[in-house]
Image (cartoon, rainbow, N blue to C red):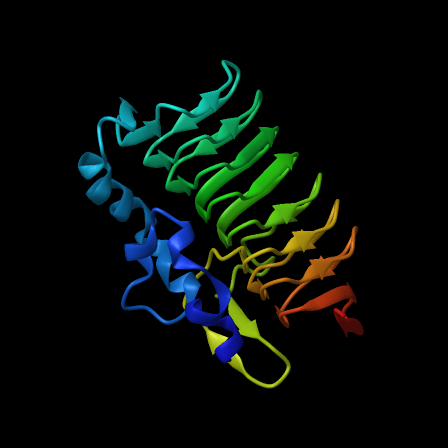
Length: 221
C-alpha cells in the first residue's frame, strides 16, 4: 500500500512535527507518539515566537484563541492560527500555522499540518490532517470500531494491521471532506481527493479522486 506511506501523503515541510514522522513508514504509526513528542520539543521552541501557557502547552504569540475555547495539554499551536469560541482541544494535539479550529470542534490526539481548516462542528480524534486539508461542517472522524477490535487499513487489494484500537482518519495534502460525512476507523484519503457530502467512508481513497460512494469513486480531471 505505497499510496498510504508518509512520503506519498504529506509535505513534511508544512508541519512543525516533521521529526515525529522520522523513521516510520505509515502516518498512523505516529499516533501513539504525539504526546511525548510535544513534551520533548515544547521546551526547545523559540521563546520569541512561542509562549508557555500552562502545563505542556506552547502557543505561538500570534495565535488568536477566543475566551470561550477550552484547551488542555500536551499541546502546540503554531503561528497565525485561530481557535474559535466553543472549540475544545483536549490534549496530544499539534496544530500547524494558519489553521482554523472552529466553533464546537473537538481535537484529540491529532496532528494538523499547516493551513488545515476544521471550522464547524467537527470531531477529529486519533487522526492526521495534511497540508491545506479541509473538513466541511459536521464531518467527523470515527476513531473506534463498534466491536472495539483493532483497526485494519484495507484498500481492496491488501490490508495492514495497525495494532491500534483508536484510529480515526489520515487525510493527505489538499483533501476536501464534504459536510456531514463520517470517516470510519482506518480511513485513508490520499492527496488531492474530494469526499462528497453526507458520505460514509472507510478504507483507502486513491489520490486525485472523487468519492461519491463506495461503489462510485472516479478520477479527477
